[in-house]
Amino acid sequence: MTERPAPFSAFTTPAFWDDPHVAQQMLACHLDPGSALASRPHDVIARSVGWMVDELGLVRGSRVLDLGCGPGLYASRLARRGVVTHGVDVSRLSVAHAREVAAREALPATFDVGDYLEADLGGPYDAALLVYEDFCVLSPEQRGLLLGRTFTALRPGGAFVMDVTADRRFDEVQPGVVEAADLDGGFWADPPYLGTHETWTYPEEHLVLDRYTIATDRSVRQFWNWMQCLTPAQVAAELATGGFGPPDLWGDLTGAPYDPDARSFAVVARR
Image 1 (cartoon, rainbow, N blue to C red):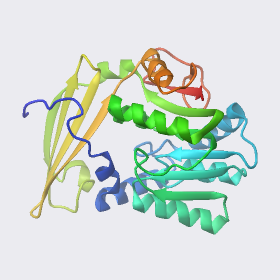
Image 2 (tube, rainbow, N blue to C red):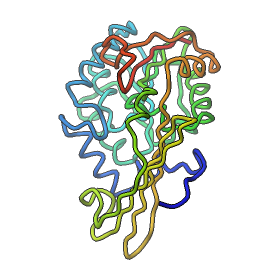
Image 3 (spheres, helix red, strand yellow):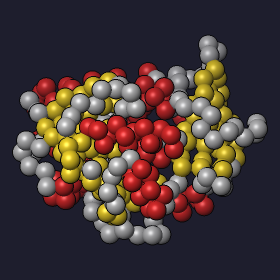
Image 4 (tube, helix red, strand yellow):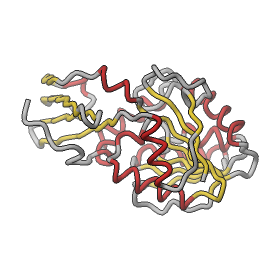
């Protein structure tokens, strides 16, 4: 392995999700009802939407912001209940799919291509969603920026809902390197290519970096995927800095009870 990079020294998440080849692979995973590689399985998403509607008191005409909406798997389900949804995502392919579904079903849902750290989020909203543990791929500075922007987009009393990679997840990760022809079965590019997957851990920060180097006969690209494993106390402190009240803790976004030994948890915080 090469020397361990400094924490959060590169940020390629938007490039990963909007890479033409990778985006096709990820959209296929999103749309596979049983896959958990890009979204939760569809039955879990359906239960999550039902729980959020009840827990947040969403009714027909309520307005919801879906941050990192992908192909609209949550937003479209909310819109079918009459909730007015707006999604933002960097993947042009996924947003195109979300727009197609909304148009075909005449849903009260709109979607923009953009980075939620920079894009106009609109508002005010009754609730904002950030799912699939996206909070933990961001640096502390990026998380602060996102919380500030989300706070501004919400109405007073509006709810911010997200799931989080738990601190104990860090203990399961081992550093290492894997190099293979057509790594992950052609996921990263059209074969042939050489893929290298390096994993580093940062014990003080409970941070993990998975870096993928993809070399074809035309280019060499890198994708840096960060994962910071957080405690509820850390999340509550960041939310408070962003102006939010103390969060309610849940096991996941279906409303399961909080489990301190689980690999993830969910929070609901109010502006």
